[in-house]
Image (cartoon, rainbow over all chains, first blue to last red; front, side, top):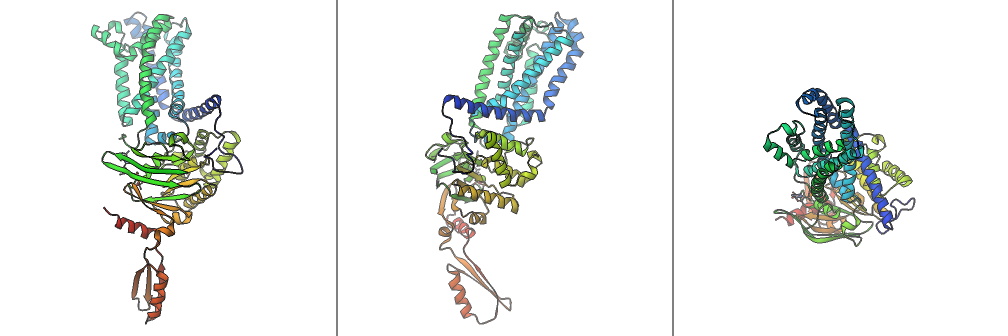
Length: 273
Length: 278
Ligand SMILES: Nc1ncnc2c1ncn2[C@@H]1O[C@H](COP(=O)(O)OP(=O)(O)OP(=O)(O)O)[C@@H](O)[C@H]1O
Ligand SMILES: [Mg+2]
C-alpha cells in the first residue's frame, strides 16, 4: 500500500480491500462502528426520548373518556392520534442529533475520515430510526393494553406502517437540521411545526368534527397521511395502508435526498449562529 | 508525497488562498507559519478534502485528495470531540473508521496512549478534559492509524510543556518512519526542535520556503555589550561573531556581560512581514 508508512512491528493499516465483497465488508464495519458510537451518545442523553414516550401515555389516559364520548372509535382515535403527534415531536431527536455534529465541529472530523458521507449518515440515522420505531411500538402496545385500541388483525401492516413513518420523520428531521442555524431555531420549527401539522392532520381533534376547509387542508400534512395509514394498518386494511404509505415514502425520499446532498458538502465554518 | 500547485480559494471578497503552492516529501516535516488569516487552515481543509479549491490542484501520492480520503491524518485547529464520549471510545471510533480491527486496533490504541500520555484520563468523557488533554486526544485520533500524511493544525495551541514535548516527540518519530507532516504553529522554536523545513504563508501564498538555516542566512543578528558602569551598546550585524571580536578588541572599559544573538525565525518572520507589507 503506497500510503502506509513503513512500520516493522505490526501492520497498522490493512491492505486495500480487493473485491466488491471486501468493500462491502469494510463499509459494514465502519457503519457498525458509527452506529455503536451514535447509540452510546443517544443512551447517554435519553431525556427527550423518555419524555416523548411518557407524555403521550399520560395524555392518552386522561383524554380517553372525552374521545370515547365525542366520536365513534374514540379509543382508536386517541391512541393513534397522540402516537402520531408525539412521533412528529420526535423529529427534533433526529434534528438535534445531526445539528450537534455541526456545533461540535465533529461532522467535518468524520468527513475527513475514510467513511464516505452515505456511511456517516447510515451510522448516524440507524440508531435514531430504532428509537423512533421503539417509541411508536411502545405507544401502540400501550394503546392496545391500556387504552382499548383494538388488537391489530394483521400486525405486519402495523410494522410496515411504523417503519415507513419513522423513515419519513427521520428524513424530515435530517433535512431540517441541515438548514437551521441553531438549536433554538430547530426547536421552534419542530415543535410549532409538529403541533400545527399533526393537529391539522387530525391527530388531536378527529377530522370528522373539523370544519370542511380544515378537512381539505389536512391533506398537506404528513400527519394526516400517517394517521390514515396507522388507522388502516390497525384495521388490517391493506389498500388503505399502502396508499398513504406511498405518499409518506415520497416525502421521505425528497427530504432524505436533500439532507444527504447537504450533509455531503458540509458547511465549512459559517452558517451557525 | 503532497503536491499543491497554485491553489486559489475565495470566500466572497476574501482570497483565503491566492496561488498557494507547496510540496512536502515523505519523511519531511514542514512548518507552516504565517499571520492570523494567512490561509494555513484553509490549505489544511483543502488537502483533507473538506473544502474544494476554486483553482489549482492538490495531489497526495499522485492521487487527488478524494481518492486517499481517510488515509490522511487530520487534527483540526478547533477541538472537535464528542462531549459525552470517553477518550478510549474516541480512539476506537477513529481507529475503526480507518479500518483497524481486532488486535491491530488494540495495539494501535495502546501505542498512541503511551506516546501522547493519555492513560491518566483515558476513561473520562471529553467534556471534562482540560484544554491540553483535549488537544492530545484530538491529535491521537489523527495519529492512531499511522497515516502517511499528517496534517496537524496548531496541535500544541494552549499546551503545557509536557504536552508540547510529547507531541513533538511523536511527530518526529512518525516523520522518522516516513510520514510527511504539515505542522502549523505560531510558536517558532518548535520548528527548530522538529528540524522542520519552513513555509512562510502570507495573504494566501507561500512567500518563503526552505530550511531554517537557508531562510535566516543573511538576516542580521545582534551583539550586545554591557559595561561595568551599566552603559550598553547593541550592534545589529549579519556576522555576529566577527563583530563581537571587533568590539572586544576596541573596548576601552571593563565589560560585565556579552550577549550574542544569532538571527532567529522570529527575525525572518519580522523581516518578511516588513518587506512584503502591502
Ligand atoms: N468558511 C469561510 N467563510 C468565510 N471566510 C472564510 C472561511 N474560511 C476561511 N475564511 C477566511 O479565509 C482567511 C484565511 O483563514 P484561515 O483560517 O485559513 O487562516 P489561518 O492562517 O489558519 O489563520 P490562524 O493563524 O488565525 O489560524 C481568513 O480571512 C478567514 O476569515
Ligand atoms: Mg488556522
